[in-house]
Amino acid sequence: MKVYTRSGIREISRKHGFRRSDSLGQNFLVDKNIIDKIVESAELDENSLVIEIGPGMGALTESLLEIAGKVVTIEIDSHIIPLLEENLGKNDKLEIINQDVLKVDFSEIITREKMRWKERGGTIGKVAVLGNLPYYITTPIIMGILEKEVAMDTMVIMMQKEVAERIVAKPGSKIYGALSIACQFYCETDYVATVPRTVFQPQPKVDSAVLKLDRRKSLPWEVSDRELFFKIVRAGFNQRRKTILNSVSTLDGLEKSELSDMLEQQKIDPRRRAETLSIEDFAGLSNRISENIHKTHKQTYK
Image (cartoon, rainbow, N blue to C red):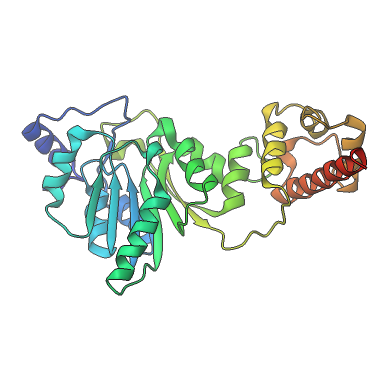
């Protein structure tokens, strides 16, 4: 049964008495071309481990199983598991985890699978996270994976178009913000495709987009204190209309006059707004502030 068609979804839903959940954001993709585009973008082979988020009825999962060495798929809705199992059949390459994705330990899954492959004399070549992310928890999912430094190589994920555009936005854009910087700090980002709302069953109120996020092997920016760096980024964008001087001076322990000097030392006009600053600008400012804080502490305890 083709679960990427409207008729297929209706038929299997009737058979199992399944009713989709609005609260879980269940909108099923009914366009094989988009599914193929997601799979192709991930560049998988038989040595790939895929962690799939929100398989629905298994339209994408089915394609992944044809290529990848192992697919671990995470689905919160226990009512949809029997439909998923029927559609995909018994397959040694598939593991279904019935759990809230925000509570799943991705690192534990990857470590476990690497050990299993090693015991069989194999090695995982690529770890990929794929899926159609629920709109209401898109950012927590992405940031959870990035901030915990999950050892994945790539993410190819579908999300609300507006969020996707914010992630790939560049300095100077009105939608460039803390999310843009966080994702681009950890990953190289690529806007793969716009997905119109008409290719979902049922149809959502907004369009979607597919993004590819490749984990950076090394960071092109030197950041001495990553926690401070992100604190400064968040402060800069908390009140977007403020100048970078006024927004960042709200952080504890920073004198406005000192911050103004540090900005000028970094060749950043204190009157600029956060949305005009690049990651490199924020990194330089962060390092300068970190150096100043450590210098002050040393003088205090002499």
